[in-house]
Image 1: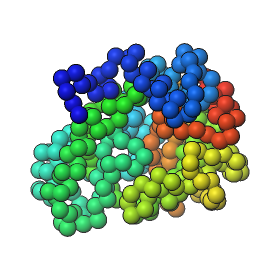
Image 2: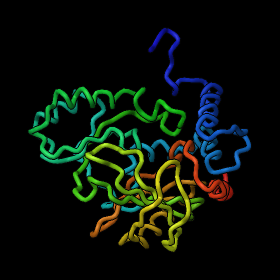
Image 3: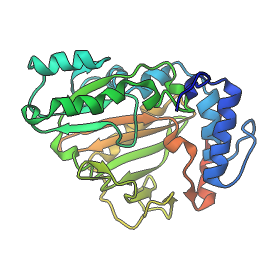
Length: 296
């Protein structure tokens, strides 16, 4: 409930924001640490959120401007095409009713993660637009986006909604591939399968870690099971080269892909996976990645 003294997180003073983040870290991870002397990967992610000041970050974490960034870096064809972008509900409604959009597409928010704020539209004409408007209206509210979080990389972003081409082989998101890269060098990757059930994030989907030779690693991420086997992606070597290029110049970034029989697509670049609030098992894996994560 808001009152006269309420301020959303992104308007908090730095000291208050850091204290809240550190309390949450202790609650999730079971211990405290000095944010000025982080050691493990998840600890350094907390430092990264507050003190890594790279002007490219806001441009990259926005799912709309991210596509422009990828085209600048790699050329056209590496991201899923966009039909329209809106910064308010009225403009969305106008274009919806004037036939600008195709029959089938995906509706997404630009400042969310982990499968939130995504609607797959198979038949635009069959959609109850009044009901859709009520849901999508909240996507434009800063308090419902990652701007209102402890991740300062989102603070200069503006909430938008965009319509993206529907890719039938992405709907189930059977496989996506996420490369952990340090200073331009991939270290390992994980793949998530069966992330969505009837379009809803299950939050208990399997996650399997692999080394760069595609050997499965005995690593678990939080409560996610690691009891599946995933085939090596068809465009694995190209993924490796692209991951190196896109991660160059960043102390850490996770480079995420989708793969199809025809080609690979960029999903996103992630600077603070899970907000650094999810444990890795064994703990030595978190420590190993912490050693590789050289803060500026």
